Structure formats: C-alpha cells, structure tokens
Image 1 (cartoon, one colour):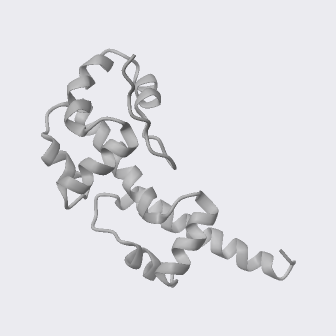
Image 2 (cartoon, rainbow, N blue to C red; image 1 turned 30 degrees about the horizontal axis):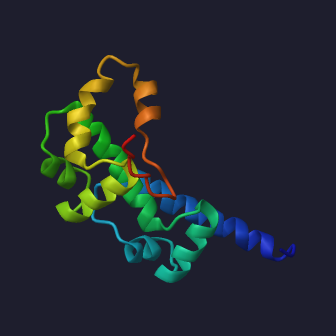
Length: 145
C-alpha cells in the first residue's frame, strides 16, 4: 500500500466499522447488504469484498451470527418458542433461521432450548463462552463413539 492509498484505506475501515456497528445495533431490523451499502455510499459488491477482507466474513454472515447469538440467549431464557425467537431476532424464515442456527451451533434450536437447562446456575461469562456460535466455519457434527 502506498502512502497515498493509506488515507483511503483508513476511511474505508471507518466506514466498515460503521456497518459492523449498525449490524450489532440493528440486527433485529430487516437489514440486507444493499441497505447497509447505501448507508455508507458503496455498492453492495464493494461493501461485501471490503467487509470480508477486513473481518473475514461477509456482512450477511456477520449479521446472521449476531442474530444467532441473540437467539441463543433468548432460547436459554426459555420463555419463548423457537418460532417466536426466530422473528424476535429479525429472521423472516423459520427454515433459514433453523438451518443457520444448526450450522453455527451444531444442534437445531429446539434441541438447544432443551439443553439450556444444563447451563442453569453457571456464571453468565462461562455460559457465553461455552455456547458462543462458531464463526467462519460450520460446527462439526457430533460423532457416536
């Protein structure tokens, strides 16, 4: 990178941080890459390439990870159905939500909700660590021994 490229690179990073912060703040809103890109005056393709280069995953993948993390917390709480949780975190399709949840967590949301009782009584920092979604790779399927 040349010295003349550096200011543009820093501006791009600042814009990407704004996109990431918006996803973190508005994950339950109907967000798509086009809307995120418009917010920082980039094309959707350009935003996706820059975001992936900076954070290692696409904006959509990052958004879904945020939604799944929130869904996990709601499922652990136990007072909402899987369908209610799906819509609460901004997903519009139960099938897509369940598929992505299973990819990231390793079990379907209904099973996760049933297993949530196992973490009852643990400090929240421990629960968060052991139940965090796996980012940038799919969960490995459990093997029978």
